[in-house]
Image (cartoon, rainbow, N blue to C red; front, side):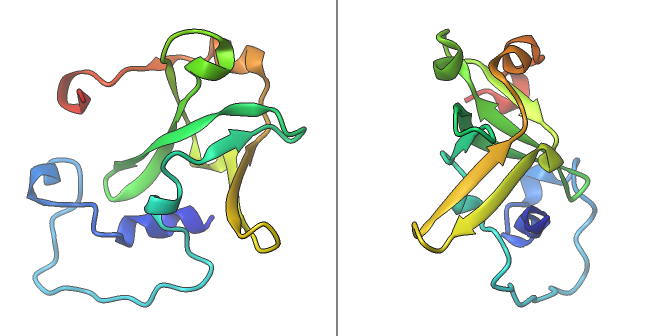
Length: 129
């Protein structure tokens, strides 16, 4: 999935040295293809089920060891409850650019019951906002 290219967006810094590989001694410059997805286009993107029902919004992208390992969704509004977050594997969400609508779209094969029973992610400790 093109979301893997997000790792090249310069989101890593000295403060994250514990969770990413050591930086190489020389910078590596890349060319970003037209198939890439930029994280700035993902934050706040509505995620829908295959049938078009709202499932939540993309809140965060999770990196570990220089790899994308998850996507945090804000689902409280959808479930009719207070703010609630769940983390899903990146392969659970399909992201594409719809040329006709000139916008990004995200879908996942899930239902509200699965969101209700999903473990909650909390912005606590070092992730506290």
